[in-house]
Image (cartoon, rainbow, N blue to C red; front, side):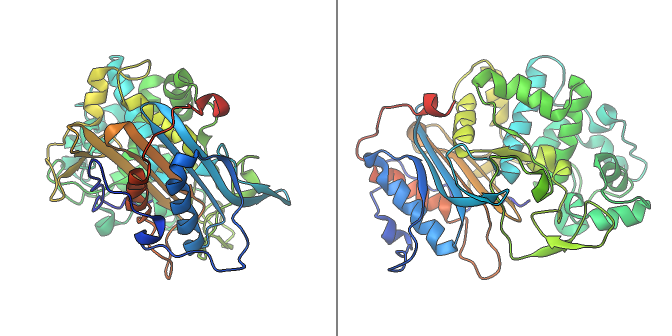
Length: 418
């Protein structure tokens, strides 16, 4: 899973209307098969729909979703394309499930904030104490706190020591254990090695840090990570579809789309040595849980985003403040910072723009909450690969589509999908 840091989120209040074709788009070729769609797009928001269609066509994406909301109401919900399940070709619905990759991190961040809110956890607590990890290999591990895991300042740098969530074969060989490895194996392997930098000294994005947060949630709550999130965070706001994903195509849920990648990898779910499509057994989905393992739809994610708008049944005002708090490393050169599973920046309306993407073989997702109460989520069943156009472009494209709306609809689509 990757997280492209924000060279974007440059939305300006009152952005001028820009037709989709002016955003680097090109129309579908004459005679090409029409893109099948489902869901609801109000005529006033056609600019969003056209921008998505162009983006999808340019990148030959077979399954996608878009949801757009304003001031707590879901106004647009769209499924694009088709997927194959059990030999049947099915249209993507606004409620179809996609892997959302690192959009999972703001779910995990909120779960930690909720445990702190309920008095069950201190964000300043040391990870060695919480999880019983030894600091013998590197005494600096004792300085890793929950805050530092959340804000990616804990001391691991995947560009130096590799991402352990994507290093299954090496870990299994090092420990002398069979595939698939599990969380305990990953923790044993990493804990026996030195950190890459002093905790708290800089920001470096870490999937492993969020994997550890999942284990903290389990230890403190006495529940499985998935059960805690579904019961304490999702159910109170009426989100019931979201669940953790599985590795293999044969394990997919009935409403889950298919994933596409041109790349393959040697299976990490067994010791067969079989070369498999990367999205199906080329990485271990259960191990990704707290850092990137959730399945959701775009409407689920924009509804989830409402949790952070104001104090409610899931998070109180103090917790929301913690979610978006600046880390000890301060603001970066782009004027943004990393909170609890969100990139954050002050906006021109006196509030905060918050956003995150998710990326793994077969998945690209993007969720943003911006000024004037607007939020949007787009999810695709493939990501940028060698020779494909930039996928991060979806951020400014959808940001500019806001400017094409002269009058916002008022009909809330939530009752249709929840």
